[in-house]
Image (tube, rainbow, N blue to C red; front, side, top):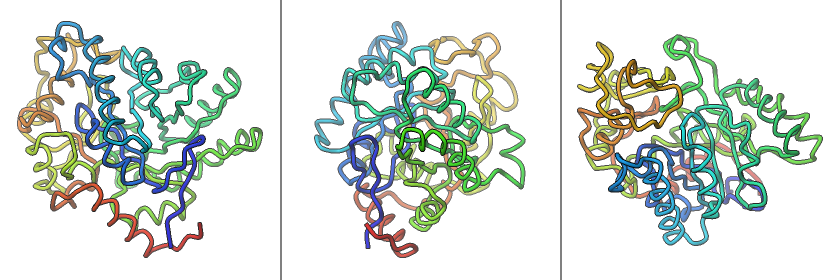
Length: 361
């Protein structure tokens, strides 16, 4: 038996797995292309993607546009027939320009999180690029869908429902994340399905629901498909792969991590996330670190009061300086024990998922 495929627009996703976007520089063209070639959706992170460009510190916006174009084109060369996406943070200052660039490069899918992408349909108008917001509640899904319907006559091509067990920037409070009784992803999925049903019925159009956050195994995939999701998004598992674009030191941190090494940390704009406890995290949780260079990457970030520069912290870690940088992780990172090829990981996940649930095509 095969796992069910699902549709995003006119694109058939053969394996119902989206590789989550991980920045800065963790998921670029190499990883995204490998996942796309294995039948899933490979996703490039657009966050400060120009960090390797010579003008990154002097003209950050230009460097990021240049880096984005390079990575999309390289991914397409490596995966001419695969489904490729780019993940953007709505909270970034160059969000609109980056989306427009990705559309011009004919990327298949744009995923938008860390904020409400209320105007996103206007940025892809007239293109074949599909769009999927990331939400963490039925309320957010209802608001986005209502506005897209009213202003643009457009429904999300998919909705990624991210629960509290993910890494990165999360749509939950620190108290919720530290609580012994966190919101359950299955419950959030049901809320999103209920919140969007009226719009799906109006357009006679299915909105694929993608479960995300803490999904680690094939059994997890099967359970969320049973719960009503059409697919899953996984990020942490893909770090420990040969094709992951991060430095080997970054991957090794995941392998070495224990459950006690993972803690909640606040980003410069107040959104919490999960990170590996290291020298950097210990410093920034005690006192603010002086910011010598501001990249103007995040709206609402004040260099005079921010606890640290998230760009410098993420660039340091992805380049291998994992003790003096920020390493975001999902809640199950401590379960990773080895590095493997993307193709082998995808086959393992699908094989295990099929054992726990039998689907008819």
